[in-house]
Length: 265
Image (tube, rainbow, N blue to C red; front, top):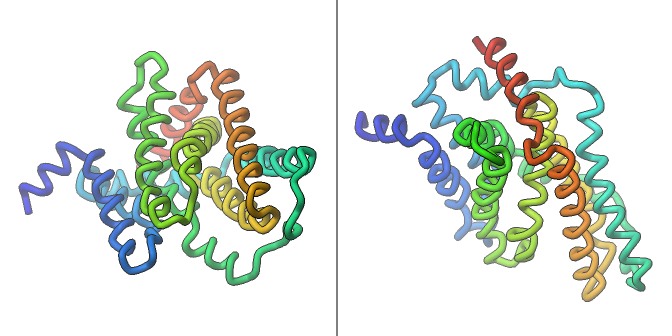
């Protein structure tokens, strides 16, 4: 047991990644490829409990519950989602696609599933632990914030591979869209002063918006919609990188994390 604890203390981030995959993927053979969304959060809690104890757990908790941010950050994420999803819908229609079923509010069962098993529950692990850990590791390096973002995106993309193998999501969702999504998440997290709650709302809004729009197109029209969806998401991501000069607001994040650290202490 002491050997395991020593290994985790010496290699906290690799342990987090390994635990994330193990805790998330164990269900894959029994659920037709579905993964456990709580895996990253549980991995973060386990690693922090062993390496940092209560102070580390309090810091994670304060990041997740950090709601004292400017009101517009709660709207910024949904606004970006509306831009690339709505823009893809309109452009697809202008390019000649036909609507198979008008977008509509998902059923209560679907909404409940998104609340209890949706992707927003990943974020305490990815945004509460992985992203700030990599940002600290790459701090001071040229384009360190971008390196941390892309690194988190790689681990997030790998995490989704069972969904890809079982046909639940498309390859470009994993290999292309994930990184645009991560850039938006990193920017929101950092600019809001390290609020995982803002990121969770953004992710939940993304899941709900996708559920609303998914019945709209079928066949070739659906593929063109997804292509436009991904392209417009990347337009926003590249605009963020250009506007932030690849720093992604890490100075604001460091100030916010210092405040969170003081609150946790």
